[in-house]
Every structure is written in C-alpha cells, then in structure tokens.
Image (cartoon, rainbow, N blue to C red; front, side, top):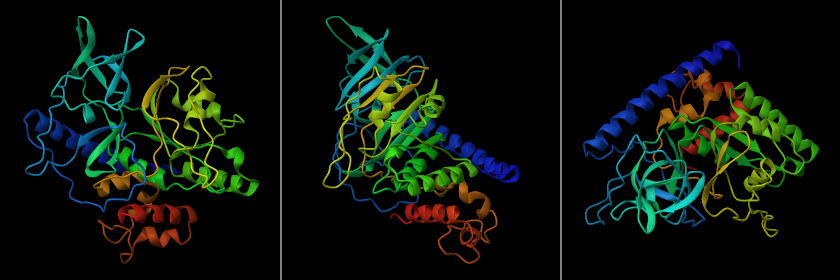
Length: 375
C-alpha cells in the first residue's frame, strides 16, 4: 500500500477507534449507574445455524422483554483482579493460580454465562474445605463475540483481552473461501483487535490453486492485511506464524476441521491436543476441541484454542465497524459521490467503478455486500 493510501486508511481507523473508545466509556459509565446499554440502530436478519454447541459463555445484548426471567447479576468489576481464566466448559471455570489450573466456583446470583470467558482476569476468595470462588472480574480490554444460535439477542463470548485473533481457514474442494473470515473481522473491528489470516493444509492444494492463494496473500498485504499460508504437516509457514504470535494473547478461531489443534501440536509438540480426520461423506471437519482453553507456548504466546464453528453470527451491524473491517474499500470510498454511500449500487459509487478494473477490490466489494445485506 503506498504512503498516501496508507495515511488515508490510518486516519480513518484512528477516527473510528476514538469513536469506539467514547462508546465503550459511555457504556461503562451507564453500567456503573445502573442504566441499560443502548441498542444498535441497524438490526440485520438473523442467520441460519447448523450447530448446537453449548460450551461458550453468553452476555445479553438486548434488554429482556416484560415477563422474562430476571437477569442475574455478574460479579463486580475490580481493577485488582489478577488471576487468569484459562478454561470455560459448560459452566466449569478453570483459573491459573501459582502456575496450576484450579477449578473455581462462581457465587450464587452471578451470571456465569457471559460474566466470564477465557482470557478474563478474576479475584478469588479462599474458602476452607471448598474450591475458591470468584468475587470480582477485571475490566475487559476487548472481546471476540458472536451471536447465540438459539437467541439472536445474546452474544457468545469466545475470548477476552486479546492482542491478536488468528482466523484459520483451509481449502475446501481445492479453494479457500473467506466468508467466515470476513464476519470474524467485523466482530474484531468492534474492539479494534488485529487479525491474522492463516490458510492451513496448503499441502492439499494443487499447483494452480496454490499459485492463486499466493496471489491472494500478496493482494491482502498490498491493502495492509496480514495473511500466511501454512502447513502443519510440511512445516511451511510455521516459523512466520510462531513469530507473529510470540509474547501475545491470541485466539485461534475458524471452522471445524481446518487444523487448529494440529497447528497447536506443531508449534508445541508437548501440548498433544486431540485431532481427527475430516468426514469422508461431505469433506467437513469434526469437532475435536469442545471447550475454550488457554495454552502457553514456547516464546511466551498465550494461545486460546476455541471450538470450531460452522457459521459466525454478528447481530446488529454498525457501518463504521464494517468500514474498519474492510480497509481495502476505504481509499476508493473517499471518492464516492455521497459521503454515506453504502456501495450497494448508488449513483457514482467510486468503489464499484474501481472494482471493474481491480479483481481483488471487486472480490472485497462482494464480501462487503454479502455481510451488509445479511446474506
């Protein structure tokens, strides 16, 4: 990306970040005052799901309707919380205490679902003859969330307090489809979390598809996006991946069967995470990771391994969040006739005009439209 374009994108992202910080501060002040959080203005259609995982934690994003059960109160916030949550599985909470994983209790009346996620910090109270229990939760810097398949008014909190999110994909029928990656990027943009696209299992691609992938990675890099082609079996790209996550708290997220656990084993053979082959009847992956866990790797990386997902719901979408997730469109969009252009066929849309001569931009515009239109 040339310097002028880079400066334009940087200015927009900084402006978006300032707005996000203001919104987060307002929400936090409202929470302390007992006020309900504001609802999003642009509700999108709810996507169909074909999974029923129950192990991730939840937080409500809309006020309960009249007559619904009273919401339980989460543990209070505390800046002094210093114990790291390293495992969440169907309400069971594991916390790292003096280098060991300890099962803890959440106090009665607290909302275990949504109050805690892997990556959170908590304060504990020791109880004689019983497991310690959580008395407070540290404030989150950020979180990666997606909508609950059973209730579009609730978010599943996948991980908290991230330095980076690694989106792992793999070839399906020889091609790499980035639809889920784009949706994850929008969720990450809400908290200004950086993302890294990792395409695994490249050893399964033929020469033509591999060349196409290399061109795609170069195009991403030209627009300021990080992407790496790797193979857990041949070792391709593993050193670049190891360098990218060193010393950082990183969530690995992606569909089932893309090889997240295999990558973890390749980076740290002592981890020995369970793996499984894809199903022969449809080529889809199998769930081998059934709970979110934090694993410490050589080099100081803290890897949050998450269960695979088949769809990634976003809930209400804000245009500024969407723009931040598609930096490829920002430079061209500055020349659109209308400042609020949504790039859906408006008159004199510079993004659409430029997409006719830029194949990568055209693909990115198509992804933008699919998300904005709820497809």
